[in-house]
Structure formats: C-alpha cells, structure tokens
Length: 207
Ligand code: PRP
Ligand code: URA
Image (cartoon, rainbow, N blue to C red; front, top):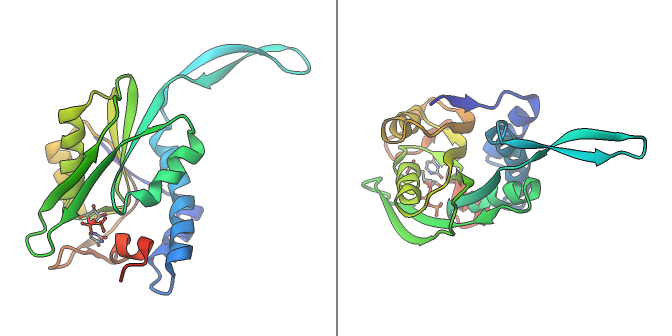
C-alpha cells in the first residue's frame, strides 16, 4: 500500500512550526489540530458517497453525501492530539483508544490500555503522530484487527521515518499510511531525525 506524504504549502508551514523547538505546548496543540485537518482530509479522500435529491432555493438537484462512517483510534498519549481534527471534520465519528508506551531502552511497545467500540461497517483511522520504528503503530493496528471488524484501516501520522514505514508495510501491507512528512532516519535512541522531538511531551507539556 502506498505511503502518501502531504504536499501542500500549508502542511509545510504547519510542520515547520511544529518542528521548531521554540513552539510551546499551547501553540503545538493548535498546530497539530490544523495539520490534522489536512491529514484527515487526505486520509478520507476516497470515502464512499451516495446520491441524494435536494431542493436548492432555485430548483431540485442531485448531490453527493458521505455514506461511509468512521471510527478514530488515537494511540495514547500523543494520538490524542489528532483526535479533534477527526471529530471536527466528521462529527459522527465514534472513538476507541489504544494505549502504547515505547520502552526507552528496548524501543519495544507495551500496550497498557484498550477500549474499542464495535466498528462494523466503519473505516478505522488509527492516528499516532510519530511513526518511528513502527513498533507502536504496527501493534496498535494488530490490536484493532484482533478485536474489531472495520471495513478498512488507515494509519495517519505527522512524521514518519523510513524504518517505521517499512515495518507497517511488512506487517500490514493493506494499510495505507498518510503522513505529514517522511524524515531522514532514526537516531540511536529511536528518535526521528530531523523530527520534532517527543511529540507526547510537547503536546502535553510533560518535559
Ligand atoms: C511515541 C509516539 C508513538 C511511538 C512511536 O509514543 O506517539 O506511539 O512513540 O515510536 P515507534 O514507532 O518506535 O513505536 P510514546 O511511547 O513516546 O508514548 P506517548 O505517546 O505516551 O508519549
Ligand atoms: N516518538 C516521538 O515522540 N518522537 C520520536 O522522534 C520518536 C518516537
């Protein structure tokens, strides 16, 4: 499945501000939400629609309405930053949660929480801003697959590393990845370069 990287001046501008070390948590949250609108719009570009008949003030016409519903699954904690963007654009989205914490030494994800609603007939958007080694994202997708039955799964992130993209493609080849940027590499601690640092800490102000 292809990786799609946003290519829009607004996405570049928002990402540049997110990456900037001077950006404080309040601005970081607002920027994440705005970039989220672009990411979620791209992730839902092919949502199913149906034809409906309406009357404009001038005459009857046939138009398109969205017929496919969503389930958003933010990966805690950092994924919470993208949740508002989904519900802003699609208010009838239902929400499930998967909690994943990456071990600082082994870089292996540990799942510490999950609450998933029924998602039959809905498209699942797994949202986690940083796709680094891919361990957390892949485990979150596996958890959704093992416990629910969405029509499809899309993974949405702000910054992806090549290593993480390769991991998702290996484990879940049918899952499209929508990213704000594809960065150069991981450092020895598993942080993305140039990246933006620890997304969860910057979002929640926990330095
Ligand atoms: C971050 C991020 C991803 C994960 C990415 O979460 O939000 O979930 O790291 O790394 P990976 O691709 O190598 O697994 P973190 O474990 O820091 O937890 P947090 O969201 O609670 O800050
Ligand atoms: N998690 C983050 O928050 N940032 C990284 O660069 C890698 C994993």
